[in-house]
Amino acid sequence: MPVIRLEADSPERTQIGEGLVKFAVQAGRLETGREEGRYFLGHGDGCAVDGRRIAPGDPFAFDTESGEIRCLDHVEEGTATARTERE
Image 1 (cartoon, one colour):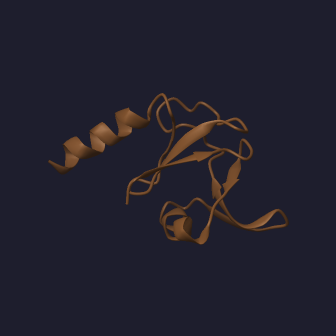
Image 2 (cartoon, one colour):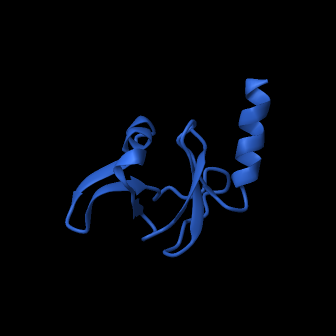
């Protein structure tokens, strides 16, 4: 599965659909049981590269293979590293 680009709902979590639940569970990032919705991707730890918090409305990337959250400044860096490791 590819890197998915999303827009943050809050600094801590973003609502996701059922298609991403499996990947959120594998990454240990699934949050449930909230009034606002059924499934959420937790990203309170910020960008995996520099720890930058993801603000509401900010685009960010969820790497479905590694489970990492990255700001868009670092999304290409992560995918290039993953490609190199596979080769």
